[in-house]
Image (cartoon, rainbow, N blue to C red; front, top):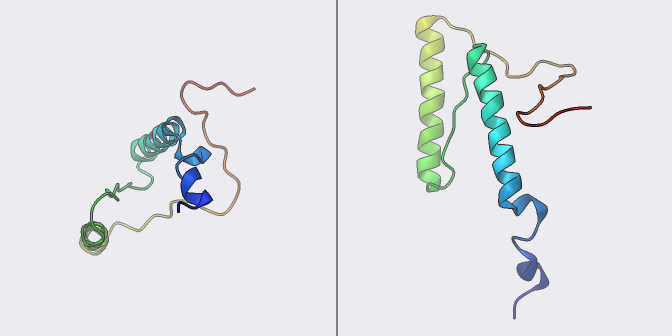
Length: 96
């Protein structure tokens, strides 16, 4: 017997492809802004991999960051500071 939950699975508003594509596009825009301004490097990990592969990717990012900080003397940057943020308007959307 299939539960009511399983019958509805995938029908949630966050499971809609259009919304996921817009969220992905928005994160890509924010990443480009950060990289352009050299604020904080972004790292994308493919979560469709096995748990071991995801863990290996994360470990590599951490190890590379530790090496960069210790060898090059570059500081760790905070992604966000306390306070309010005004995010730029996403491309293709006008604010009133």
